[in-house]
Image (cartoon, rainbow, N blue to C red; front, top):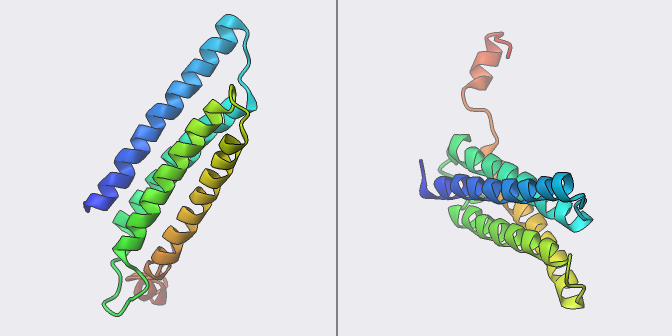
Length: 151
């Protein structure tokens, strides 16, 4: 398993832990103290789980399982997949932290930080799939389909 794949998957697990901690805190507060989570807490929890864990895990596994790039493929560059990793990690971490801070801080700079971190997440996902696009191709399945195999 390539080091970038391991980085995606281990970071996904770290975001899962963060998301579970936020969710645990929200349920304790709601059930024991009657304090319902704010929209910011729900957003932080959701982004930690769905973007930080689910998307990072999907991207790491895609890097691992998709066919290797063809020798003539100049679109796929591991450096772009690495850049997407850092953009998504930093964007998601900033988004989660920013959403949690928004509960107590209404400063304009923090609102901009949340917006920019969300845009960084979007850019990271688009960059990842741009660089992976040429690796989404049939390898062996065309021959099986030609023989009439269905799957």
